[in-house]
Image (cartoon, rainbow over all chains, first blue to last red; front, side, top):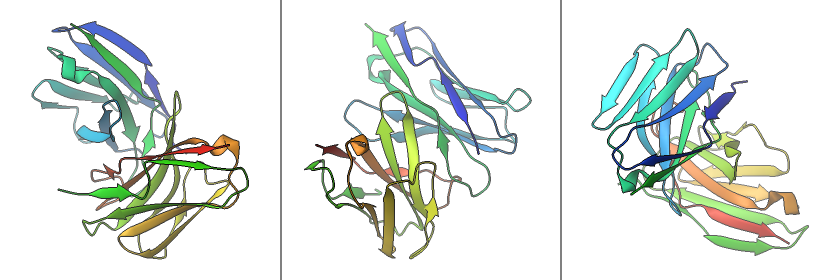
Length: 111
Length: 113
Protein backbone atom coordinates (compact mmCIF):
# COMPACT_ATOMS: atom_id res chain seq x y z
CA UNK A 1 0.00 0.00 0.00
CA UNK A 2 0.85 3.67 -0.06
CA UNK A 3 3.37 5.03 2.42
CA UNK A 4 3.76 8.75 3.06
CA UNK A 5 6.72 10.21 4.94
CA UNK A 6 6.61 13.76 6.25
CA UNK A 7 9.44 16.00 7.47
CA UNK A 8 10.20 17.74 9.70
CA UNK A 9 8.09 16.61 12.64
CA UNK A 10 8.48 20.01 14.30
CA UNK A 11 9.33 23.38 12.79
CA UNK A 12 9.75 26.79 14.39
CA UNK A 13 10.03 29.95 12.30
CA UNK A 14 10.10 33.64 13.05
CA UNK A 15 6.93 35.52 12.21
CA UNK A 16 7.19 36.85 8.68
CA UNK A 17 9.60 34.15 7.51
CA UNK A 18 8.71 31.24 5.23
CA UNK A 19 8.01 27.65 6.26
CA UNK A 20 8.42 24.54 4.10
CA UNK A 21 7.12 21.07 4.89
CA UNK A 22 8.07 18.11 2.71
CA UNK A 23 6.42 14.78 2.00
CA UNK A 24 7.43 11.77 -0.06
CA UNK A 25 5.14 8.99 -1.24
CA UNK A 26 5.80 5.46 -2.39
CA UNK A 27 3.06 4.62 -4.89
CA UNK A 28 3.82 6.17 -8.26
CA UNK A 29 0.15 5.75 -9.19
CA UNK A 30 -0.95 8.26 -6.53
CA UNK A 31 -2.52 11.28 -8.16
CA UNK A 32 -4.14 13.39 -5.46
CA UNK A 33 -2.25 15.21 -2.71
CA UNK A 34 -4.14 17.28 -0.12
CA UNK A 35 -2.83 19.18 2.90
CA UNK A 36 -4.77 19.48 6.13
CA UNK A 37 -4.26 21.91 8.99
CA UNK A 38 -5.22 21.07 12.56
CA UNK A 39 -5.20 23.86 15.11
CA UNK A 40 -4.85 22.97 18.75
CA UNK A 41 -7.99 21.23 20.02
CA UNK A 42 -9.74 21.48 16.67
CA UNK A 43 -10.54 19.17 13.78
CA UNK A 44 -8.31 18.87 10.67
CA UNK A 45 -9.36 21.07 7.76
CA UNK A 46 -8.30 21.01 4.12
CA UNK A 47 -6.18 24.04 3.19
CA UNK A 48 -4.95 23.17 -0.28
CA UNK A 49 -4.67 20.20 -2.62
CA UNK A 50 -2.96 19.35 -5.88
CA UNK A 51 -3.54 16.74 -8.55
CA UNK A 52 -0.85 14.95 -10.50
CA UNK A 53 -1.44 16.83 -13.73
CA UNK A 54 -0.32 20.06 -12.06
CA UNK A 55 3.18 20.98 -10.83
CA UNK A 56 2.30 23.87 -8.54
CA UNK A 57 -0.76 25.46 -6.99
CA UNK A 58 -0.98 28.68 -5.03
CA UNK A 59 -3.59 30.20 -2.76
CA UNK A 60 -2.56 33.54 -1.27
CA UNK A 61 0.32 32.79 1.15
CA UNK A 62 0.12 29.02 0.69
CA UNK A 63 1.56 27.03 -2.20
CA UNK A 64 2.07 23.36 -2.92
CA UNK A 65 4.57 21.91 -5.37
CA UNK A 66 4.64 18.39 -6.78
CA UNK A 67 7.56 16.49 -8.30
CA UNK A 68 6.13 13.28 -9.74
CA UNK A 69 9.49 11.96 -10.88
CA UNK A 70 10.95 12.19 -7.41
CA UNK A 71 7.61 11.34 -5.77
CA UNK A 72 7.62 14.23 -3.40
CA UNK A 73 5.46 17.26 -2.71
CA UNK A 74 5.88 20.25 -0.45
CA UNK A 75 3.84 22.88 1.33
CA UNK A 76 5.18 26.43 1.34
CA UNK A 77 3.84 29.13 3.63
CA UNK A 78 5.15 32.65 3.08
CA UNK A 79 4.97 35.67 5.40
CA UNK A 80 4.02 33.45 8.31
CA UNK A 81 1.63 34.75 10.94
CA UNK A 82 0.79 33.55 14.48
CA UNK A 83 -2.43 31.95 13.22
CA UNK A 84 -0.35 29.64 11.04
CA UNK A 85 0.74 27.79 14.18
CA UNK A 86 -0.82 24.33 13.92
CA UNK A 87 -0.13 20.72 12.96
CA UNK A 88 -0.03 20.16 9.21
CA UNK A 89 -0.70 16.79 7.58
CA UNK A 90 0.06 15.82 4.01
CA UNK A 91 -1.75 12.92 2.33
CA UNK A 92 -1.75 10.95 -0.90
CA UNK A 93 -4.21 8.77 -2.76
CA UNK A 94 -4.83 7.03 -6.05
CA UNK A 95 -8.15 7.08 -7.88
CA UNK A 96 -10.94 6.13 -5.52
CA UNK A 97 -8.65 4.67 -2.92
CA UNK A 98 -8.38 5.94 0.61
CA UNK A 99 -6.17 8.79 1.75
CA UNK A 100 -2.87 7.88 3.39
CA UNK A 101 -1.69 10.61 5.76
CA UNK A 102 1.80 11.61 6.80
CA UNK A 103 2.72 11.74 10.47
CA UNK A 104 2.27 15.50 10.79
CA UNK A 105 4.42 18.60 11.30
CA UNK A 106 3.94 20.85 14.29
CA UNK A 107 4.60 24.39 13.07
CA UNK A 108 5.23 27.10 15.65
CA UNK A 109 5.43 30.74 14.62
CA UNK A 110 7.64 32.77 16.95
CA UNK A 111 6.42 36.39 17.39
CA UNK B 1 -21.78 24.32 6.14
CA UNK B 2 -21.03 20.61 6.39
CA UNK B 3 -21.56 19.34 9.86
CA UNK B 4 -20.01 16.14 11.15
CA UNK B 5 -20.82 15.33 14.74
CA UNK B 6 -19.59 12.62 17.07
CA UNK B 7 -21.55 11.21 19.99
CA UNK B 8 -19.01 12.03 22.71
CA UNK B 9 -16.00 14.32 23.13
CA UNK B 10 -14.58 12.30 26.01
CA UNK B 11 -15.18 8.70 26.97
CA UNK B 12 -13.69 6.50 29.69
CA UNK B 13 -14.21 2.76 29.49
CA UNK B 14 -12.85 -0.30 31.23
CA UNK B 15 -10.82 -3.07 29.62
CA UNK B 16 -13.09 -5.65 28.05
CA UNK B 17 -16.10 -3.37 27.63
CA UNK B 18 -17.87 -3.06 24.31
CA UNK B 19 -17.63 0.52 23.08
CA UNK B 20 -19.73 2.31 20.48
CA UNK B 21 -18.60 5.54 18.84
CA UNK B 22 -21.14 7.22 16.61
CA UNK B 23 -20.71 9.71 13.80
CA UNK B 24 -23.42 11.62 11.97
CA UNK B 25 -23.09 13.89 8.92
CA UNK B 26 -25.80 16.10 7.51
CA UNK B 27 -24.58 16.68 3.95
CA UNK B 28 -25.72 13.49 2.23
CA UNK B 29 -22.12 12.37 1.74
CA UNK B 30 -21.63 8.87 0.34
CA UNK B 31 -18.30 8.24 2.01
CA UNK B 32 -17.48 8.06 5.68
CA UNK B 33 -14.26 7.24 7.50
CA UNK B 34 -12.96 6.39 10.95
CA UNK B 35 -9.41 7.37 11.91
CA UNK B 36 -7.41 7.21 15.06
CA UNK B 37 -4.91 9.94 15.86
CA UNK B 38 -1.88 9.26 18.03
CA UNK B 39 1.10 11.57 18.64
CA UNK B 40 3.84 10.97 16.10
CA UNK B 41 1.72 8.56 14.07
CA UNK B 42 -0.59 10.98 12.29
CA UNK B 43 -4.04 9.93 11.16
CA UNK B 44 -4.44 6.22 10.56
CA UNK B 45 -7.48 4.84 8.79
CA UNK B 46 -9.41 2.15 10.63
CA UNK B 47 -12.40 1.57 8.33
CA UNK B 48 -14.28 3.43 5.65
CA UNK B 49 -17.62 3.08 3.94
CA UNK B 50 -18.65 4.28 0.49
CA UNK B 51 -22.31 3.32 0.74
CA UNK B 52 -24.94 2.11 3.16
CA UNK B 53 -24.11 -1.37 4.46
CA UNK B 54 -20.76 -1.28 2.65
CA UNK B 55 -17.45 -1.20 4.48
CA UNK B 56 -13.78 -1.49 3.65
CA UNK B 57 -10.85 -2.16 5.96
CA UNK B 58 -8.32 0.59 6.38
CA UNK B 59 -4.76 0.26 7.58
CA UNK B 60 -5.45 -0.75 11.20
CA UNK B 61 -8.81 -2.59 11.40
CA UNK B 62 -7.78 -5.16 14.02
CA UNK B 63 -9.90 -4.95 17.15
CA UNK B 64 -12.55 -2.76 15.48
CA UNK B 65 -15.73 -3.23 13.50
CA UNK B 66 -18.14 -0.76 11.90
CA UNK B 67 -21.77 -0.43 11.03
CA UNK B 68 -23.52 1.76 8.49
CA UNK B 69 -27.26 1.16 8.45
CA UNK B 70 -28.16 4.68 7.30
CA UNK B 71 -26.33 6.99 4.94
CA UNK B 72 -25.80 9.72 7.52
CA UNK B 73 -24.56 7.51 10.35
CA UNK B 74 -21.34 5.51 10.71
CA UNK B 75 -20.56 3.66 13.92
CA UNK B 76 -17.23 2.36 15.17
CA UNK B 77 -17.36 -0.59 17.53
CA UNK B 78 -14.66 -1.82 19.86
CA UNK B 79 -15.79 -5.35 20.63
CA UNK B 80 -13.59 -5.71 23.71
CA UNK B 81 -11.74 -2.52 24.56
CA UNK B 82 -8.06 -2.75 25.42
CA UNK B 83 -5.67 -0.17 26.85
CA UNK B 84 -3.82 0.11 23.51
CA UNK B 85 -7.03 1.47 22.01
CA UNK B 86 -6.75 4.59 24.15
CA UNK B 87 -6.61 7.30 21.51
CA UNK B 88 -8.34 10.18 19.75
CA UNK B 89 -10.90 8.90 17.24
CA UNK B 90 -11.89 11.10 14.32
CA UNK B 91 -14.75 10.56 11.95
CA UNK B 92 -14.84 12.15 8.49
CA UNK B 93 -17.11 12.25 5.47
CA UNK B 94 -16.76 13.23 1.82
CA UNK B 95 -18.67 13.26 -1.44
CA UNK B 96 -16.05 11.33 -3.40
CA UNK B 97 -13.40 9.09 -1.89
CA UNK B 98 -9.99 10.78 -2.04
CA UNK B 99 -10.90 13.23 -4.78
CA UNK B 100 -12.85 15.54 -2.58
CA UNK B 101 -12.42 17.27 0.72
CA UNK B 102 -12.89 15.14 3.80
CA UNK B 103 -14.82 16.92 6.55
CA UNK B 104 -13.86 15.87 10.03
CA UNK B 105 -15.83 15.62 13.22
CA UNK B 106 -14.57 17.12 16.49
CA UNK B 107 -13.11 13.82 17.70
CA UNK B 108 -13.71 11.51 20.64
CA UNK B 109 -10.92 11.08 23.15
CA UNK B 110 -11.28 7.52 24.41
CA UNK B 111 -9.47 6.32 27.50
CA UNK B 112 -9.48 2.62 28.31
CA UNK B 113 -8.43 1.80 31.87
